[in-house]
Length: 239
Length: 337
Image (tube, rainbow over all chains, first blue to last red; front, top):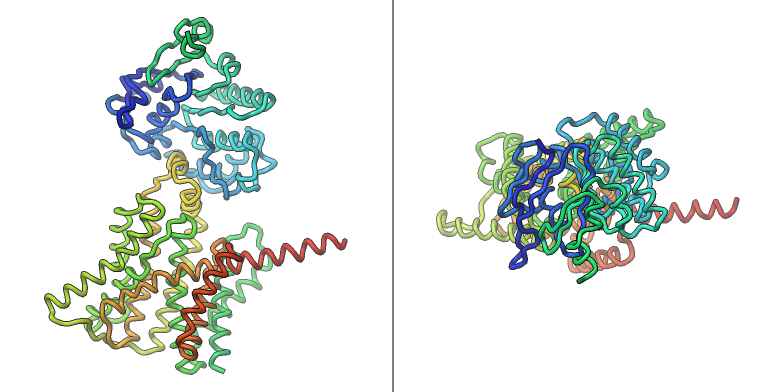
């Protein structure tokens, strides 16, 4: 049984097929990359998985259970957490409170206040933000806000973590740090799907890659296969 | 002299508001001093009818009305940023409950019923409208006030052939005690809400609703629940305040000003701390009582001017101004050393 499975997932916005008939799966412990040109439907696919939108038609299964059309909060409590392409932190709240929210609400087993605090502190240490714990989240740099989103998502104790362009807008040092972070999360046993434009990162971290173009899946395979695929090169560089 | 007594009691209210903020702090010192002071303030407030002239506690009831509307409005709208203009509707439902049940039931039953009916209305309205955002929500909640008052007017003219009704009145000291009871209940509820994880959830909804939903918060349920809780106090206050008036009709029961003033008072006081709206309500309601009797033509004008000045110069209200002044002084100290 796959951890997450999508069968013929589609969604239309007006006349535009943002995602059309995409089938995919992820297994426990994998790091799956999702790439494609701008407007390919990558973030829309994330929004479908996290139930911002409901696929029509299409079915999503998490650990064999149909999760199509569930509310986003239930999806999160089931064990699917995400970050956002444009950061969506709770800007006026202290960094630690951002993480505490994930810890207090993100799981069916709700921890006591002190326990949630402890978990949040540990997660902030893990992503390297423990020194700015009490700063309002809006005062962090973009790189740190993205780390905060990761910590907040991890606080919900997910089995599957979806990272939407974690490395966009970061400088080379920060990209290297973010790659390390992804590896460390994987080593904790959390399955990851990541959307990324930084090819170096995706090639070195992911075990398997799916390529989307105009809402359709055009290629799938190991980083090596994708790098050598003629279709993919055409899509990215033109014929 | 009466004014002085009222002012002392108002200061006691502000202290209790500040005390709620203080109890929410993590590192508390001088616990005995501040808790003891809170008890003294509560004693001053609850014995007012014993030492003050009738006029003083009638005036206090009027001020408490605005305090309850403002603080319970802030309970939901402060953290979430959903500007509700429904207070007059919930307050009016309380008034009409009182008008209908007042002659057959004891005061407390009427008050509790007024609160419950407002909760039912808030839950229905919340379920319908809390999916709306920004201006749509504001307009809908305001429309609710006008809708209910028009329907009542239509009903009265069409079916009972009357307009308005008489109310069974209660003693002024009883009204004051009940108003104070509602206020204390509201402070305690606010404290527990702010301390609980739902206080945090409410804040996160205000900051980024989509992210909140993806963090496992049942956004709709939290919003409806807190919106309804805030309506309880408004409904209860309406039910008891109605007993001050002899006669009412839908226009006076659903006066839209009772929707605008709480917003104004909360902004004036500053919504970042719990005592901000308390301070705002107390000052403006006191001024209203004074100006209305002494300069009836100027008071609405002065309210308008205050609102404009506050929005331009004090976006965080009086509390924000206080913090700025304190920051300025402490900066001066650092510069000297």
